[in-house]
Image (cartoon, rainbow, N blue to C red):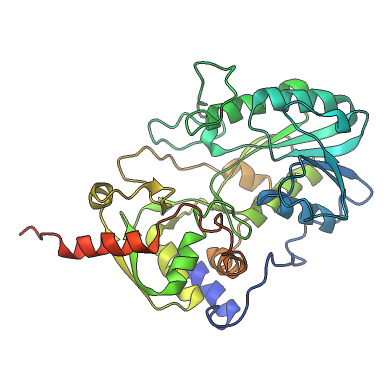
Length: 375
């Protein structure tokens, strides 16, 4: 039995009864004593740029559990009542940082920097009054054309026009790389850059992982994409938040890849893990990359976690982050908690994102079963 399958089984044993039909539908589970990164923030002040979407709330909750006095800075448009008891400064990174002027914080966590000019402006404004700047970046910064292992020293993507501020699928990664550089230039030696891969878990606003626990829980025949043994990578949002605070509390600076455990989990293990942890009655039908492409099924967004075999997809090297304190909870915990949260958020189109719709799944499966079988 391989390591990742054993972790699923351990989680199932600890979890006890199946989630399906149990009536459990809570939101973000409270942090356990093991998950709290000590009270090192007691008496210290933190500014979070953003703070009300997906990763943000987990960072805020971890900060509060760790004793920090937290201030948020955002436009006040996304879930403005989520942290009504916290000081929230209203502004816009594009052209209105007035609320930050003259204020002092021990640490800043930047969760909302996508344009280098915006990061430059905020970091320069805060440089004299902040000791530590944490920038949440992405593994998309890498120039991953060959599918090679990606370490913190791997080549970064570049833009032909570095003045562009338009965030698209092609510019997102290179713009984030320039944001990293802007922060470091403003506060040399005082910046921590965290490069996560696919962030998953409760409050996920993309559907790129949530689809699978939810779909498998519905049971029946489930369309499973591509190679069952294809390795996938993701990081639980709570593990990412805890690692961020480990870096803060240890005054750890530099660049770190923060992705899933290096042992990896295969697509097959994830789907069977969903079935086992959730107690689902699901049957998986594996469709080839070629058939899915011919059927017009889109990779990654429409068919979550599916990356065709001919697409460069370098594995992320996380040894540096692990040495700095990155830990991972069992995948089964992520599956169970994501599913439970999804049941509370189905009225939002973001919960399942633009993932495969039931009608299209049924149509594609029907075509698969009616395809001519070559002798």
